[in-house]
Amino acid sequence: MTPGPLRRWVLAARVRTLPAAAVPVAVGATLAGGGVNAGRSLLCLVIALSLQIATNYANDYSDGVRGTDANRVGPFRITASGLVEARVVRNAAVLFFALAAVAGLWLALLSSLWLIPLGALALLAGWFYTGGPKPYGYLGLGELFVLVFFGFAATVGTAYVQHNHIPHGAWWWGLATGAMACALLEANNLRDIAGDREAGKLTLAARMGRRGGGWLYVLWVAATALGAAYGGAPLIGAVAVVAYIPALQIALSKREGRDLLPLLQASARAQLIVGAAGTLFLAVTR
Image (cartoon, rainbow, N blue to C red; front, side):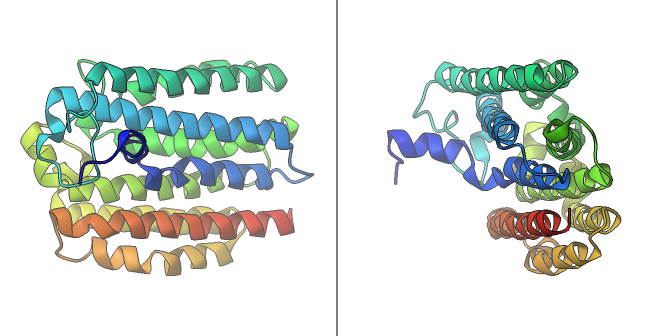
């Protein structure tokens, strides 16, 4: 069934990936202790969500015009579907990048101007993941972008702007949130191995193969538990292991292609559980 005008944009925004943007902000805000600065935290959330949606639209546009999405088995692609002109999808991506930039500039003026170059790098990284003549997502470097910007930058940055200092354990929590975001990315890449290889998109999963990519997923879950434990919350590390069991079972199974669709849902659910548990723990103990 063809999605309607509004639903096609919602689907292209890939709502199940949005926890990757919201969780590090929630963790970072409560990590700082001494009370949450609601205004700055809201700006952080706007930046993170806008950057995530912008990147999703930019990926949809770039992969669509390259023909990478022609034989995909995953979520709806608005450009490849032909329901919306490519230039309109590109403009939607630019609009959300602009929203992230405006919110980022506002936050920098309230806290530190050093956030401006960091924000500029995040915008460029979001576009050139699959955009430009040599997209780094096609070279197997997507996980690096996700870990840096949806892990360390989002978590440590949100924690910093609360009271203009980096609290103890912030970098470890950045590892935990970034690793969860990487697991979410891996859920997509494992499903798309065949199509990506055919299109020349050599993600880490496409390079390592189905079995190797499954163990890479295990590595990200282990990094999540490790980051929470060294961040001062071994209990949350244990929660992470338990929450990810259904996803790990799928990742280590022999499922391929469309049969891996439930992995994204299981990963997003586990990320929300661990993010909520971590946020609550930090809110109570800090």
